[in-house]
Image (cartoon, one colour):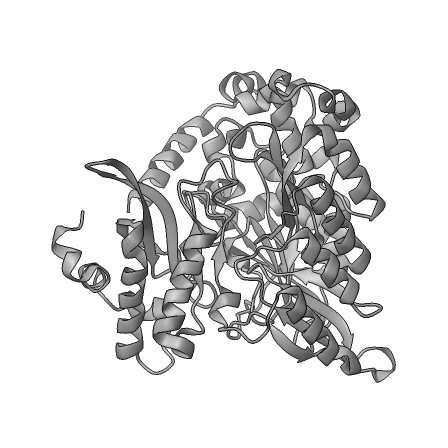
Amino acid sequence: MELEERGAAESARTSRRRERPLTQEEVLRRNSVERIKAERHPFDVLGYLPTLAATSYEEIAEEEILRLQWYGLYHDKPKVGEFMLRVKLPNGELTAAQLDAVGRVSEEFGAGSGELTTRQDIQLHHIRLETLPQVLERLGEAGLNTAGGCGDNVRNITGCPVAGVDPDERFDVTPTIRELHGFFSGNRAYGNLPRKHKYTISACRCHCNAPEIHDIALVGVIQDGRAGYSYWVGGGLSSVPRIGRSLGVFVPAEEALEVSRGLTELWSEDLRYRMSRARARFKFMVDDDGPELLREKLETRLGRKLQDIQVEPAPEGRTDHLGIHAQRPGPGGVGLFWIGVPVFPGLITGVQMREVAALLPEGALVRITREQNFLILNVPAAEVERVVERVRHVGFELNLNPMRGHSIGCTGDPHCNFAVGDTKPKLVEIVTHLENRFGERASDLRLYLDGCPHACGQHWVGDLGFQGTTRNSETGKIPSYDVIVRGKLGPDAAIGRPLLRRIPSQMVSGCTERLVETWLDEREPDEGLPEFYRRQPDERIQVIALGEAAETAP
């Protein structure tokens, strides 16, 4: 309720600003980041990167550190001169040579670090500015880049990791992903947006790419025999989470770039969303205008009416694409397979990257998934057993409790400056506890855990979500977690509720066990955990989770 009231108050302030036109001068007075971008386009930092690299870290202005975000860099924790570098991979795809190149960069410049992200990127840590020119050169030689990995850009375009090979997909969206990525990535005209802007494109029948929580989602559908997209707009998480809403249109695949440009430009040109960083995301424009008015504005900009969507594409169950699966028959009917490999909790070393690259059959590709795993595509039937065995020797076992392939933990400690507690280690602790207690009975659970409100780990929409925080005690602040229930993706997608606040870290696994146990014991046939807890009053959920501690909990 608190978030809803805050959002309503902010919308009211925005409505008052509509009564008078805003000016660029007013924006620059109010928003320091807009001033920095106006003084020098962040993409220009590449032109004087050698000078920055030769400068002592302590002498580099914070404005230049900000501009480096446009090339995928954020401070590692603590801020002493090491950085996280995000390698941008449209739909998470790499060739063997590219994965090997990232692994070599990790080993030589990033202390062997590596993690897979919910935006299907690879992130490296411990990168120093003096080595950045070499790092970018090495990646560029492999056909990789980091432009737009962070900052106020169109971020990495995500999708279904088996696009183009899934026998059940509605159609192959790979050409659309490549077209939009090729246009937006590193494009100066779209490198000064009000804030980050997230696209996802898929025709996966299970909506594995989470279209509900993106700024703009192109959701594949066949209408009157044509392949195209329903546009869902205004989704997003962070501290003001939203589930996207349909624009009510059907856009043929060949018109997707034009329509996507139009939507992005409407938002980018509206000064309302450059006044405050806290109210800059595209979802606030959708809040303020609503899908109907936004569609009218878009059609005016395009100079034509768009087709109505006849039937909204709905997800047909959920999947992780893990395990061994037959691909759509290829040329000549040759049988190929994909192998989905869990990488719990999303960590992979530089050595492991190179070893996976070395075991790939000719023509195979790797794709990263939203749930921080990787898939190997285009594996001949005769090679499947060998690849699985060699992947196991690298350190990735296929035959794990599926919960390990479904659950997400953000970067968190020790690297992220926003995190206030453990993330990946805490997620491992909770999942291991549930495995030991319930075994396969809890195998379909999605547990999403974050170390701060930014929600990179998507805690608002997990079957159970966890957000790191702190709690006051007699000895000072202690690590704690909010536990979020009733959130989910898919049919009836919803933002969860933080009904359990500031649970001390040592109590979290026990609280989670009691929530899962009650669901397993009392659920209706095939009833998911979020649906079960939607039927329970808030007070009962708190009593279940806290047990004997319920009466004394804050």
